[in-house]
Amino acid sequence: MKLTRRQQDFLGKFLDLYRQAKRPLHYTDVAEHLGVRPLSAYDMLRLLEERGLVKSEFVVKEGRGRSSVVFSPTPKAEALMSELAGDAWEQEEWETVKARILHALEEGKGSDYRDLLDDLILRLDEPSTPMIYTTRMITAILLALHQLKEGKREEILEHLRHIGFPEEVGLYALSGLTMGLTLAERINRRIRSRLLAAVVKYQGCLGRLSQENKRRLSEFTAEALRIINKES
Image 1 (cartoon, helix red, strand yellow):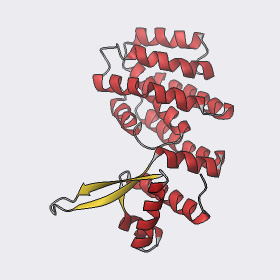
Image 2 (cartoon, rainbow, N blue to C red):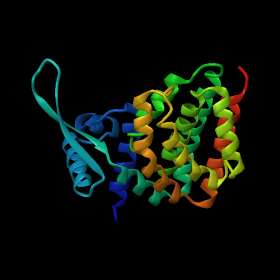
Image 3 (tube, rainbow, N blue to C red):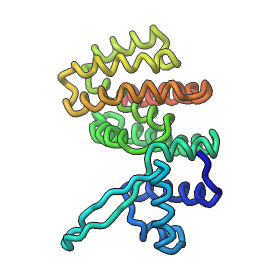
């Protein structure tokens, strides 16, 4: 898909604004932050919507009973911007997400990580690059595994190490582990269902990664495991 430089710039800034706000945005808010006229922002958002890069929805304002249109990016927009900007754009964003997750793991040492797991599960629904999606999914699987009894947890980890975890083949093996975790009663039913529903997308995203990014993902997984399993 070809976009003009102006359209690319607008879409990139809109994605940044959406990530900061963490909610669909009204075109007047977009216009204010981007320094353009409201009508110009609206027309550009509608154009991007026609190309499948943005989606709109109507929401009712509290206390007013009137609806207004808000916009959010589609996964196609994230993928396109990653493709246009190359690996550097994706890696910069991924490094930020990775650092945030590792910091949260360090802060939660000695806990059951339930709040972090809930947050990661919710974020699986956010538009994201394949690298970020797999990173969140892997962390969620590891934290779900952490909910199991210690003996059972070590048994599963030992089996994963035997087949090469956290190298590439082991990362794919997490799909099977996810299905097994759905049978574990100690894990919240909602978490189990959400992880199972995400398996196919996880496999697809993992398959789209370059060998270099799979290496980075393996290193991240090893570091996350080290923190989770470390004594508080």
